Amino acid sequence: MIGKEILHKMKEKVGLSSCSAETGKGKSKMSKHVTHGYHLVKGKSYHDMEDYVFAQFKKFLIISAHILFENILNEPDFWTETECAIRRAYRITDKTILEKAVDLGKGGSTAVTAILINCKKLVVANVGDSRAVICKKGVAKQLSIDHEPSKEREVIEDRGGFVSTFPGDVPRVDGRLAVARAFGDKSLKEHLSSEPDVSMEIIDDDTEFIILASDGVWKVMTNQEAVDCIKNVKDARAAAKQLTEEALTRKSTDDISCIVVRF
Image (cartoon, rainbow, N blue to C red; front, top):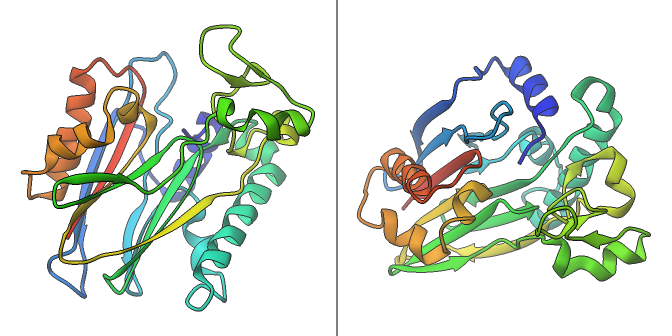
């Protein structure tokens, strides 16, 4: 998730609080059938809350992201070359974080973004292990890619880095970072990528909802278990809250952030 040094600076800038739980909701002006809700809960670790969500309906789309929001919307080719524009926005975001490491801190961030255009076309991008899952006719489908060091070992080694499970039993880049792609992390950047995976999905009559959540959910639940947990909860904010509470019940100790978009 997002590094705490970067998070605190971002929260100060936009006036967000640092409470242990946050929740909210919204709805589309284009379609009364499209709503979103989010819920965040601080984990049981001894550091400050490190998760952050952003969700907003703007110019016929909804974006859930970290600091990518302005970069994506500022891309001149967004409407005509959406995937290329998103990739550029990710690169610009990473560059900005690295350039401002003195002010933001030396940490890094994962991210997952979901952009819904005209309530019909969904574009998902991610770096790291935050995940997007769509539900169609009760069946879960993962739209993002978990960037695990063990899966990208060859690329990391080609850049001069290494993947090790010491200390602990989780594969880490240079024995330190448990994801193969991330924003920031200046001390590891030489061996890391911030290039997102991008996928597109058409929203049709079979589409029920999408879940965007941090690894605090996915460490204790499969995609299908997450979908089954909230499939009968019609209110998007209540669904997001129920999913985070279920993750806590399953002994998740990490910070948890979750956005649910219902159709």
